[in-house]
Length: 170
Image 1 (cartoon, rainbow, N blue to C red):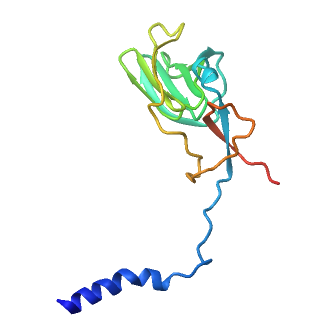
Image 2: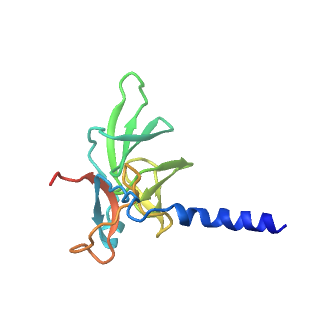
Image 3: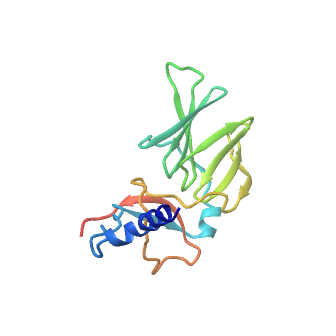
């Protein structure tokens, strides 16, 4: 029993005896810088806009005769697919910080950065925010998934990360 206790103690102390100060690699730094928005700007940022070119698509959903395509960090494209041989890009719903979406019944659920938002889709001529759940989601991570510590100097006190951009070379 004593021998087992000694072996167990030695096993516990082994990492301390083998570690070398200064040999630890520093945390890798993300190649991305955050795009920030104040809470007030975020809550008034969901708007229906003119159609635009799809440049960074994410998820795709079929909603009746429409196709909804998520544009990473920007919003959702609305495509009329009534004639699949000639789909028409109808509109763009601007939703800063949008990475994910889901559709159920006549409701589009999107992440508006850290908030979960339900948008009524009935008619497609107008969009209406039906509900917002503040701080329901974690902050957006950069595309390389590395933790980022950023300088908040000059940023609004209630700044929220709504996207990421590649850092400019120094």
